[in-house]
Image (cartoon, rainbow, N blue to C red; front, side):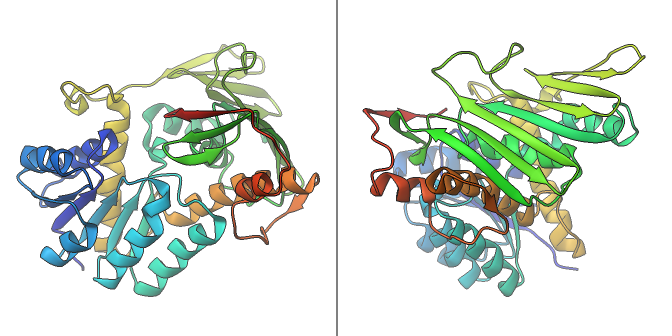
Amino acid sequence: MTDVRTAAVVGAGAQGRVHAHGIALLPGLRLVGVADIDGRAASELALEHGARAHTDVETMLDAEPIDLLSICAPAAAHRSIVDAALARGVRAIHCEKPMALTFGDARHLVAASAAAGAVLTINHQRRFDRMHRAVRELVRAGAIGDPVGAQGYCANLFDWGSHIVDLLRFHLGDPEAVSVLAQIDVAARKRVYGALTETASVVRVRFGDAVEAIIVTGRDQEPLHARGDTGIVLQGTAGRVEIFGGRAVVHGDGREAVEVRESVDPAFHLDGSPVDPAIVEQTALALADLVRAVETAGEPVLDARHGLAAAEIIFAAYESSVRRGLVPLPLDVFDNPLQRGLDLGLWAPEYEIVSTY
């Protein structure tokens, strides 16, 4: 049995505070360090939890042994931070999405962690959402018959879309994707938390011969769906599920609709924070599950293989738009096709968007 006793957080912004709070709620786990290039932000979060503040990740990792590292830095820094942590023997790494700016880097995170004997999880924390878990059990129990398709709706593929793709896989039983066909709009050079993303897209993902998913993204065009711009619909042979805005409705053929609403323990409300308390609770549960996995040599719910599967679909969507055709999986390119297409002049964005959504 491998005990996990000390933890640190990289990134002292809103999400770093969420991770720090989650760590503080785990019995036997102590937050010992917070790193951020903004020294004031690092000091404020560290003071709140009795930890030490640092402005350099490697200095923090060298200061004292760290068993668990939560990474809330921008995606561009994920590879270097993970490599630094693995080189110093960190055994548990919880990394925010999106995984990396290229598919090659995402693959590297998974391979390097496995080679070092460390456990890597990607914070698609909605797998711990009570509503989504309840819906998954209803679907497994046959409430809509056999799943045959799904639709996902959100602002963009690369950031928000990583959650939507992961949730579609979650509800469909984590099937292996076999191909992606997509078209994207790049009216603007848009960056979300510093990461390049499209302005709008339509993506078809085929899972084997029986199931396919359609994902639609965009923010500034017409509404994506009558029930909201962020959500998913699951189609079955005997009904459907609609999940939008913290509310799921299960429509089984010949049966009265069943409603499931999102709920959260009041203990997870952060004073003065705009962050949804459900995200705080789900992230805390994800961290607790990571600790369990390391200490019992089990597989965590948010194992990095799921994050990599979502990243492959997203990068394949961009690659499909570059090729103007179907992309069979596994994906055979390891850069960022969206950036490559822009460099090649395939799209001519007319303005810039810097966003957090």
